[in-house]
Image (cartoon, rainbow, N blue to C red):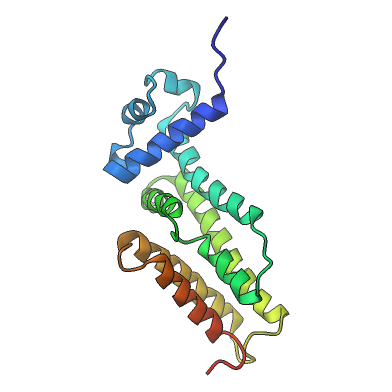
Length: 199
């Protein structure tokens, strides 16, 4: 009997092989040949799963976004409002080893997206989604009447957006310095500063 191959599973294995190469050796080493070797398949058989290197890289980049979205959809927000907001924002930051791996790959793809239109389109879409999540947090504060009366909402969306993305970058570059606890403490302090009664 012919061997039945699960194409979706194989595409995932290939994408994860691409991640490993990018993390270990850098984006410039993420060639079809190197990825195929890492995945334990022939370069020729790669064409069954991805017709071009660009298609493969786009799939591997999108996988990061899908995993973050999947985790958020499975979250149960049953804590205090501040805890709920903090937990949501931490999903966009490398606060675990798994998320650190995702972020390292994401920033490598983001750098490449400057010269690859397909990757840029996806990067822009994901950053727009991150900004929307941040905007949701600010609007949630408003809805619960927790935010300061003098809050400039648009400015605070941009400030929180910059804080989340900046902390994530620093955590990737300096994980020994910007730890999960540091990220959580900074988020707690910042969210508190947006609320009524904060000095």
